[in-house]
Image (tube, rainbow, N blue to C red; front, side, top):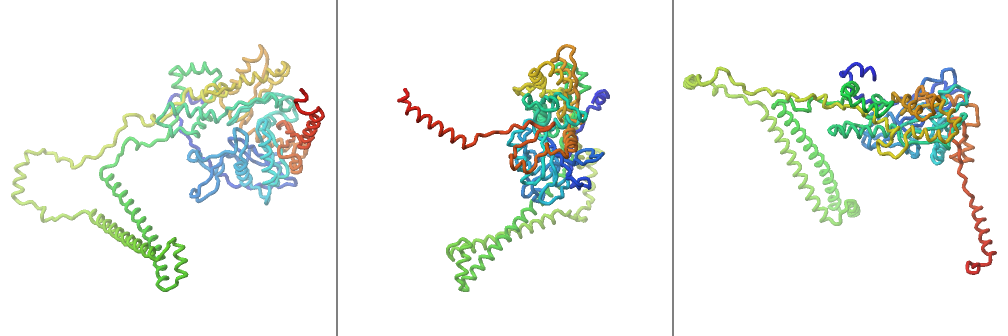
Length: 615
């Protein structure tokens, strides 16, 4: 980005890539997935993108997840794509034509729709090459939301155990898995995790390797809200390009052209300078066609095009008439067959046929036959007239051959022409001037450019200043200060020594510098802190889940078995270093309620009667 700014204005024009996802191939599990022990399947179930792969043991477990796709589905219509069923993830290709049909199993970052979640899991297992019949015979490591509701976990456990028949499952938080991957092994560390994704931003305090769930905070802002805000800004700025300013293109601008300002107000002041604006504005080139300003067709070409359209309409009408005539003819044949049954005296079959035709009497049948016969004859006449007119048009379109004898001028005509020759100019006039193309009065390419200036910093700034979009929430800095104030000073000093940034919404250039600036303002004078950005903020959650699965493959204390699911319910969770805190719901038993009611009844009877006597 800095190189583009330094090179000068000509390099500030960027075309939209409009990337189209390629369908995922159906992969094979490979020999490593079929060892003596079942190899775990690692699923990072994100609200923006799902990632799936194998946690294969060995020195080289694999460079990255084998499957990455958008976590959306679209119901296929009966006539679309050859009657195909629901389309999932990368099978959708471009999302914009199907934007109104897209469905997600998530509410914010919590999966709540069981049916759509099953479609995502089916897609993952099928394309990963799970070959077991009737079940998924592999342990599953699945990410879930921070402080995930018991209902959501219960729904997921029921789906995995009842529908797929998995042997064991382990749940963990994606940002904690990323924290686990970026810290040295066997090191119990404390810190603050700032995780920002597509729908939410979380700040998670970690004390001695475990999540302090009571002090976790969530901000309901992420990449989705930033893309929507950027779309509104540019649509207000360019009302002539409303349809071209799509959410997919806004996400592309956020991912590749936006950045976080170290000081937002100071950065806005820089943009007021014309030179700074000219050197740093990004001109996003929309696709356009040079034929929009005017037609360059000649009159003959326009006439030929009109004739072609007229022929198409005539052929279409003729085809419709023939189809209607065929249907009417078939119905007429059916009615005549029923009439023959009456003439042959087959009364039982005749009455059955009348009932099928929804008619009451032979007179009604005869009247309908007459009307249908007249309609068939009229349709045949129309078809013949249309064919005749079409033949006449074809004959008339041929150039006529002139009579050469009549065109020979006589001697008197030649003398008359010689008399009028001085009146005419020597230059012969042109029969028809060629049609010149309309020259544009402005640069058409520049008209189809979106000048993205201060919008590069305004859209991602909402996670620090939610008031920009009218949200009554605290930003990252205020929430961070609020969490730190809940701890003693020695614990605060311990937490700020390891501030860890992860999540796709943390990949903006300048994010780490901005967090350091905010901490510098809120921490005491000459105190120390350290901010670390994940090595890969998007994929480190999957890498950490894979590493965790390989490290705890033989540890039964972290895996939920089917027997434990049946005994303790779908909301049951085994805690570990990357998991949520398990808080079971303890409902009072019905028997105890009945006992309390009887005891209260006996107490009121022993007290000596009603309220009047007590008074």
